[in-house]
Length: 261
Image (cartoon, rainbow, N blue to C red; front, side):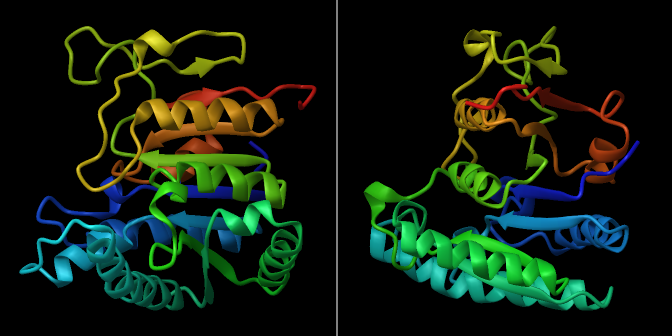
């Protein structure tokens, strides 16, 4: 199967974080290994990564402050750890990464959007993998993204990717709760389908977005002509499978509109 030229990969905090709140370095390494494989095959990958706040909680276990300022502290400490791990892991494959911390305003203001897009394009042109996250330190609570699901959609549109892959802790969208007996994975979703009754509203222990948010994000991106695939980021080599064998990979595919809105 022909690989796309440019993709966005969104990995949620529920994939990158262990039960104790610390970063799952082995899972990060497995993800980087797959992205490096795609990178060396000529695929431009934009990585939208959550995990900063959860990482900060792991670094500051004595702090139980869940206020906005507490979250900002977790993000400031955790983002430094997160990007350090990404930098070192990608360097093992001879790949350089660049960090982009952004806010909703950077997608609303045309001047800021153009500048941000130019920066990301320059990184891709120079074979640098952009690692993108919300700047939780300066974001206003009311304008925060929901676990970077919305951010991944905005980045996908901005950079006109061919495919958005959302990696979470379940295999995709199910006919009911994934834990319920008899609940089945929905492999294909088209824009005129209504599966709202099948989606649970539960959120990640560490993130801010549930499957309902992910489905809303996926449908919106698909309307713009970009295919979306939701898969379990904790499965071995799932990113490679989703790209090379989507018909058999465990994932939900949101088929794009042939006439983008």
